[in-house]
Length: 208
Image (cartoon, rainbow, N blue to C red; front, side):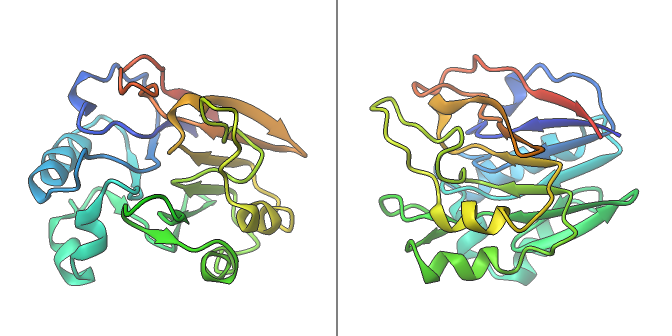
């Protein structure tokens, strides 16, 4: 299974140059301001991509996914796109879990307070998860801002220690784009935009 990982396209999706693969995973922030028109344009683009499997979570800019009801969201998700919100899917024996939440960040979407408020989301992650997709990073891994501050989630880091993930895909902190291997798990900050919202980073391709 060849997996292509991206995140934080912020409305610039039609300018992406994507490699070929079997599955594409987007780790959130498909829009700039979370307007329905932005989200619908992205979904139209995403559903037409030449991948057999298409996985999507929301990010802190994607207010549409937070404000709309589950029923209304289901109406706009194309049948060939899998949208995950504290939910999972198994594809060809690979267990994938996705969640959009991140530690409180100004007044954006899917904010949770650090501690018990956010930890309850991570407690939902099944033990047999192979690929974890979150919008924000864990604490201490590809989570440093331009000021050198680590802003990832401590509770997420603790939860991951009890899992045997093959991949953890996220974004959110554009300037921390990159990959890192820790204890047998590969972490990908797949933000395709830099801190100035310029489309400069390539999608990751991994074989699983």
